[in-house]
Length: 68
Image (cartoon, rainbow, N blue to C red; front, side):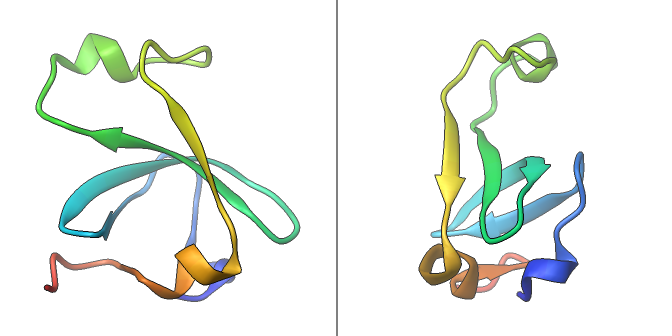
């Protein structure tokens, strides 16, 4: 994926897991991992789960489809 493909609230795949974009910065993207918990865990901010910062190297490994 390209940096411009990320939109807040949109889902994407990385490392075989589904993620939700929570913020788009100038060079980074913040996201939470959707791991099958109740949707209440993913309401925010603030979120009840860890929020991760993805850099340009991480972004290269993301896709819109679950591709292994």
